[in-house]
Image (cartoon, rainbow, N blue to C red; front, side, top):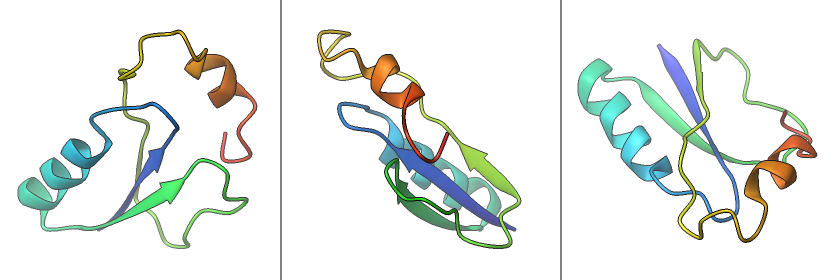
Length: 70
């Protein structure tokens, strides 16, 4: 299994998601910056971590909605 965790500015828990997937499945996990225009090939799982470390002051959800990865 191959997985990817999408990393957004101001998000938290992205590294926690990576570790949890690796420990529970043994899968290879790529951390993908939200601004990338393509995902790695052969993915079985894509994780969008929830929670934002700066609250919603930066309007993280609004930034995520305009992200090329979305």
